[in-house]
Each structure stands twice: as C-alpha cells, then as structure tokens.
Image 1 (cartoon, rainbow, N blue to C red):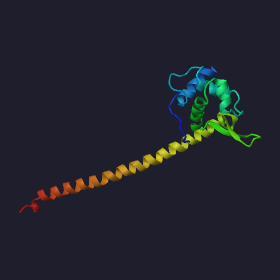
Image 2 (image 1 turned 45 degrees about the horizontal axis):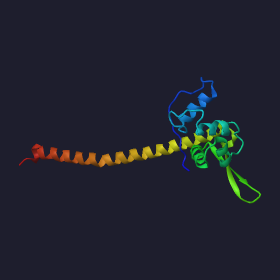
Image 3 (image 1 turned 180 degrees about the vertical axis):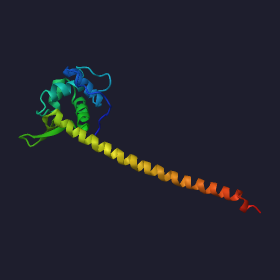
Image 4 (image 1 turned 90 degrees about the vertical axis):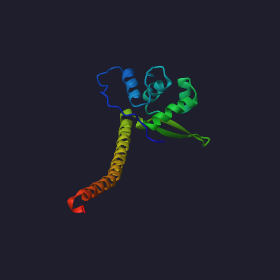
Length: 169
C-alpha cells in the first residue's frame, strides 16, 4: 500500500485545549477526515478516538470494530486502509488454536507520537524523491532548451554573415 498523507502549511493546534476539537482538525488536515466531516459521531472519527486512541496498545480486529462502531466490515476496512496508507497503524497477527490467523490493527508502536515519527520519516522520504524528480525534470527542460537556443543563435549568426559587407558581391 503506498504511503499517502495530505500536507498543509498550518498553525500548530497547541493553543486549543479541547481533545475532540484538536483531533478533528488534525485528522482533517492530514487528509483522513474529509473537509466538513468533523462530526464526533462519524465512523471514521470514532474509529480513531474511541478505539485506536483509547486503547493504543490493544490490537483491534475488524469484526470487533464493526460491532463497536455498529457498521459493516467493508466500512471498517476502508477506514483502516486510509490509516494504514498514512502508516499510523500496524498489523498485529494473531494465530488461533485452530491454526488460522487473523490480523488485528493498532496505533504503530502503541503510541501516537512514536507512530507520527514514522509518518514524518516517510513524508521526508517522499519529499526527497519529489526533489530528485524535480531536479531531473529541470535538467530535461534545460537540455531541451539548449538545442533550440543553439539553433536560433546559428540562424542569427548566419543572418549577420549574409548581411555583412564582406558577404556582398
């Protein structure tokens, strides 16, 4: 799953003291919650607040989350996949006595601040790769302009030679 996060230049939310207000705004800023869906009752919001942040070290299983949030497993997976794409969640495998396994999910390292360190590292790597592409693109642009400029200079030079007194019969 590719790393995906929304970046916006914004003022830190440190002056705001109300947990739900900060969490709603933060989840919107990073692209997890859509603009305007800041409802405390939304499934996406409750998944993070009531499950993953309330018990960050605990693995949560999709069927449990569907029951707690009173929604379907596909809806739970859609939101889990968004959080996984940001690298905020990690998979926690469980092997049952029957030998069958299932995947649980929790905040990476069981700690939001440590999980965010991982997100920042991925964002820095993504920006570094963008920089490499931009530098390469600029080199291609410069290379494409040079022959055009050189051809124009040759044409201009040929025009000057043709109009010089030495070139006249």
